[in-house]
Every structure is written in C-alpha cells, then in structure tokens.
Amino acid sequence: MPKKVLNKRMNTQILQFNTKNIELCAEEISKGGIVAFPTETVYGLGADALNATAVKKIYAAKGRPSDNPLICHISDRSQVEKFAYITPMAEKLIDVFMPGPLTVVLKKKNVPDVVTGGLDTVGIRMPDHKCALALIDACKVPLCAPSANTSTKPSPTTARHVFDDLNGKIAYILDGGACGVGIESTIVDCVNGAILRHGGIPREEVERVVGKLGSPPKSDVPLCPGMKYKHYSPNATVILAACGDDQRQRIKTAYDNLSGKKVIFSTTDDYDGRNVCIVGADIREYAHNVFALFRKMDDENYDYIICEGVPEAGLGSALMNRLVKASGGNII
Ligand code: TXA
Ligand code: MG
Image 1 (cartoon, protein in one colour):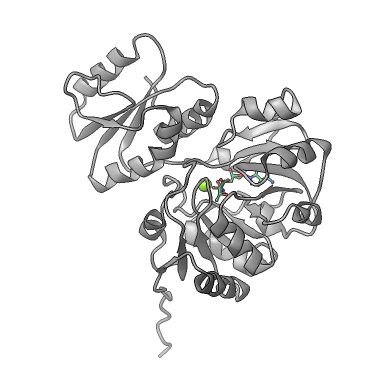
Image 2 (cartoon, rainbow, N blue to C red; image 1 turned 180 degrees about the vertical axis):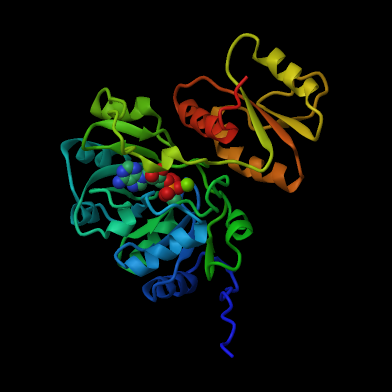
C-alpha cells in the first residue's frame, strides 16, 4: 500500500536579532528556504530572489496569486544597477530616500520571471532596518519579499503577528521588535513617472524631489497587480467614515444601528460613552497602529470596526488607501 504523504509542517521558531541567528537565517535562505524578517514598514517573508524554486515557496506559504510580483530588497545601492536599468528619476529618489520606505519600479535585468509575475519591471527597495540589512548582507543576494502575512490579512508589524499567520509554514522569524512606520513602502514607477501605491513616504515628499507625478496610465494589465486584490482585512467588518463636518454624527448613527460587538477607531474619545479604541494622537500614530489594532480586534472577536477617515494628504493618503481596502468599499 502506498505510504500516505503528509504535508511536512515545520516547527516555526522566533529568533532574536544577533549574529548567530542572522547566520542561521542566511543559511536557511541559501538552502532555498524562506525566512520572515523585520523592516521599518512591515515584516517581510524573504527568499533568495535568484532562486525560482525558493521564490515559489513564498507564494505557497502566503496563498498569494502568482501574477502578483514581489519587491526585491537590497542592502547596497550598487545592487540597483545589477538588477535594473536605472532612470534619472530613480537616481534622484535613491539619493534622497534609500534606505527608507520607498520602492522604485524599473525595467529589470537578471531577475527571474517568478519574482516579477511575468512583468518586465522589478520593484527594488532598501529597508532602513539594521536587522533586514544584516540579513541581506549575510545572504549576499537580494531577498524578494512580500509582507509576511497570509494573503488578504492585515500586514504584520510584530514577529508575533507573523507567527499567528505562518506558524508551521516557515522555519524562522527574525524578531526585530515592532516596525517603526507600520504601513508599507511608497511604490514609484520610475519608468512612467507615477505613484503606484501610497506608503511610508508621502506623495508630497516624493514630488518635492522629482516634480509632479502622474497617475498610472489606464491599461488592461494593472501596473501594480497587487492593487486588484482584497487586502489588509481583519475578520471583523470594517466600516469607514469619510472625512466631513458630520463625520462624528455618521459614526454615532452607524454604531447605534449595529447589533454585535463593535468599536470605533478614533484619535479622540469623543463619542458619548460608546466603545472607542484610541488609535493614536495623530495620523502618523494611526498609520503605525492600524494593522496591529485590526489583529487585536480579531483576537477579541469583534464583529464591527467603524474607522474615522482622515484627510488624504501626507501620510493620510496611505492610511486612507489601507482603510478603503480593508472596508471593501463599505464607506459611510
Ligand atoms: O514596505 C513594503 O513594501 C513591504 C516590505 C516587506 O518591504 N513589502 C510589501 O510587499 O508590501 P507586498 O508584496 O505585500 O506588496 C508589494 C506590492 C504589490 O501590490 C505588488 O503588486 C507591487 O508591489 N509590485 C511589486 N513589483 C512590482 C512591479 N514590478 N510593478 C508594479 N508593481 C509591483
Ligand atoms: Mg502585502
């Protein structure tokens, strides 16, 4: 009788950041394994970007569609030219924002198709995080990495979040503490001059360096394939209250009309005794905390989260993009 083939479940270990553990993780990656690591934005799930078999493990562990390309993470600026054709716009952005929460999209060189979802471009970024940089250095190859969450779930901003999603599927999670920014990098298409995803560096700051950027041209193939998928969602239903004079009243009415366990995400406790979760004092703190708080509400079995919307300027554009996606268009 044929032996029953069981899926091999790994014993996932959370490792503190030190030289020995960096070496352990680099060895795992050089053997074709995948490892989660911290960056200043969110935790990433990394593989050797030049090893197509290893890269496929990322898509499998996350349950991610294979046409959604991965960002390549580097630890040295000279690696940009090794893997992409640099443009004047990219050069300026790299000078000012690298390392940092910025991804430049350029025509690719020597990058396997499995990394780029078949596109002829590649996203490249250098994280501003000593643990990520030490790991990439030790691996001596770029690490392609998406956020280290199960597809559609909120991005992970602590090692524990990664463990909750990927326990049993990967060998190691490098623990570098909570991520500083809390939302993902800003993606700039440096071939066509457009912002593809709002993120940790506001559009205004990018445009101060390279001038006005366009919106992506309309085409059948989305320029940022990930944008067409459901994203960032907790199990609770998210309702987003757009900015406006009567925002507070809309939130109160929606809250009162819902039955179930419910909470208001707000920067103030100004809701007449209704259940409020303070997300931080300002937009930066709200962005920093939002994914972690989504996960906390799921742990506490909330049915509804009503989120205060913020003005779409500065970091507010990136935060609103995540809130709109998490709400699935459920906007009041
Ligand atoms: O901050 C970040 O960017 C984090 C950390 C781990 O670096 N990474 C991250 O990766 O957010 P991910 O895979 O969750 O989101 C990357 C997005 C996806 O929407 C993908 O479609 C888009 O970047 N992308 C990647 N390469 C691209 C390319 N060549 N052209 C257009 N979009 C691209
Ligand atoms: Mg992601």
